[in-house]
Length: 160
Image (cartoon, rainbow, N blue to C red; front, side, top):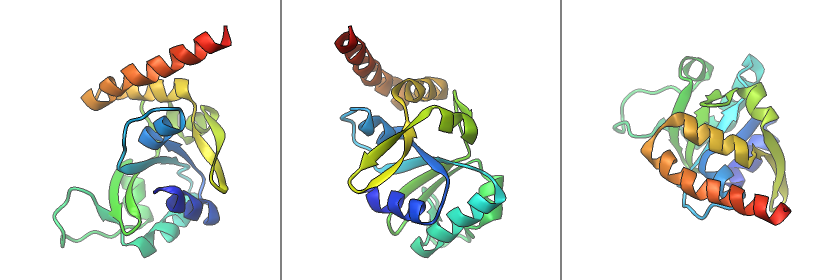
């Protein structure tokens, strides 16, 4: 479902790391997610590329009544560190930093290359995903920690 969004971001030369529910699925989670969460590099050039990729998809703030004025541009991204959008391609959450990890360079360092179909991209490693879920303190993330920590424990047992 999100492969085409990721592919378009790559084609647009956007620097990003997949985080959140899709990263959890990559790590073995069976929970469903209805959005793609990414942490993007916040340089002016990268923000401009991100805006260029997303604008044709009519991005609009998720959870906001339709028809309210909204302009998706570099200024909106710079002034909104967490932006939840609905687009013609699907729901997308944009973060310039991740709780428990920090800004893009730290998130990138906590990621790994993964392949999905014909595309390769960066996604959070399991330990980083757990740290970020723990740092948010949201009930849904706390619940998800049970599964993610079980996946980590199973992997550790397999190694020994």
